[in-house]
Image (cartoon, one colour):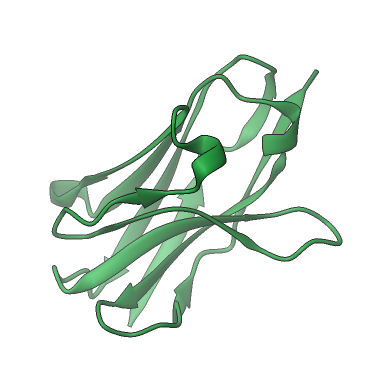
Amino acid sequence: QVQLVESGGGLVQAGGSLRLSCAASGRTARDYRVAWFRQTPGKEREFVAATNWGGGSTIRKDSVKDRFTISINNAKNTVYLQMNNLKPEDTAVYYCASRTVGTVEYAYWGQGTQVTVSS
C-alpha cells in the first residue's frame, strides 16, 4: 500500500511558477513508478510526467516538456513537480499517482491539488 498527499497548488498569474509536492508513505520501493496527472471539469484525466522512485525513465507530456520538471527526494519520500512559465491552460486539479513498475494501471492516487493560472 502507498499513501500519497499532494500540496503546493494555488493561484498564480500566467508566466509564474509553482512547485507541487507529493509526500508518500507506505511502500515507496525502487520498483515503484510515480506520476503526475491533471484534470479539468468535463475532461478526462491526462498524463503530465512520470519517473521511477529509484530514478530514471523520466517522461513528460510534450506540451510541458520545456516548462515542467519532475524530481524525487528519496530521503523525504517526496516527488515534486516544478512548473515554470505557467499558462492559463495549465489550470487543473493535479494528482500524484504510483504503481509498481511492470504494471499498467496506477493503483495509488492522492486527493489532488488545485492549480489556477490567471491570464
